[in-house]
Length: 603
Image (cartoon, rainbow, N blue to C red; front, side, top):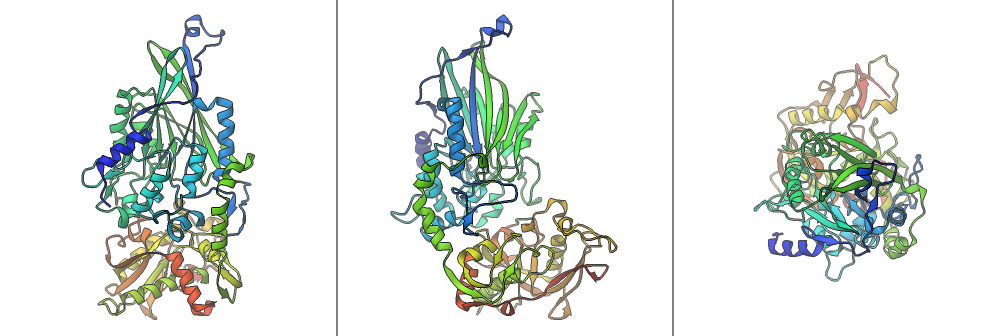
């Protein structure tokens, strides 16, 4: 989809990108310093600004688990949903004065629940006369000021994202989301707002939005040749001085990027995935950063800027609307200008409040439609299937995924020059709690098994490349001596690797010897009962995240791609089960791998 620069500039002016916007509320009075301070400080005028922030909402409006068809519950007692966040926001606004607050988000908004899937694919917002996206409705009603783009905003393509953007009464910011041809901003880079102060000049606040460079890998099919995503540090270094030169007294960054300084995609990109702390350290002139993407809770992280020695305060609220970050920024007016005196941050827990009934009422119809949709029965299971042990035992429920993928790819390649190659398949144990119960099988049962909106790709890889792929995957397990006690809670996630970056590979047989060092664990690797031939070619059925380099698995990103599609793997599973009518493990279950120690099975 070509990016129209003229329309962008017109839209930017309308949304406030690059335009100072005065608060519609009355101007608060600047207040004097308490009399306990020295006399010269008592004459200084001061102003208190509160910036609130959410991130990684992933379509959570209600405190509802669509996969379990029940109120959301976890062992920590968390609550989820924008309806809870709305109550917290209202409370802060009542305490601080709405005219003294900003409400931001750091991205990943329109993907993640059946609610968002439904309005992207089943009743899409892109249709003529189509619905307004539930997240746009909720965030408009709550009164968000600006939202940074997350990588998952691109999962349904640019057309869906642009439709969502048109429905929002706030700008979607992305200073480092640029037109691939012109390298000019494809979205508003920043938002500015003026806060009037009685008896003093207004306080000008700039919000710079930054998104994740990994979009170029993860959603390559949608963005390649259309959008580019340079690094956060370099773009912040470009824009922050501009914002200061435009008169910004406060600069807040909303960054869809974690704070760890690490990248899941290795050296495939010259930019850091989780670079929020690096931005704070390297770029002068930033006062606070709302952090996103990493799904971790950071009430307050102080980073010293290497050039100025000043402290930058970072905060990341927990994902799914479980927390609200609150930055309290104190400013002082002296020598003809406002300057930030202090910044402090904290997080508020959404489990401490009730839903805002205004939000739940607003979206009750949409919620009811999605609940009915996910509870449709599509088949019958002869046995209960679960992922409880799937991360360390070959579980039939994961074999269901690989079998469906193999069948889809074989059918797609029939009659082509690749039809004679054997098809193998990968899948990951995304969830530790997914279950398909014996009896009726619903869309929500299958959706809980495959929680991501991944699509299917076919690549050609050699036996040697598959072996390297498996060795890399096996790094997920902690090295465990043959005589050591096996604790399954410590057996996996070595080096912090998440479950979704551990892959089964079907169609082969192999042992993973966890007594061995990483890189030397794959043993007895065979195909059709014979030792794997390193030169033999296979068609590898793989999800688009992995095919584009997600997780930095070797060889797959550069391998020859012979087929791909836009239908979600989750949908293919539902179609497969619907066509079968009966979900019987005998039709798909196989033991392809096992954990061993010095050749002896662990389980």
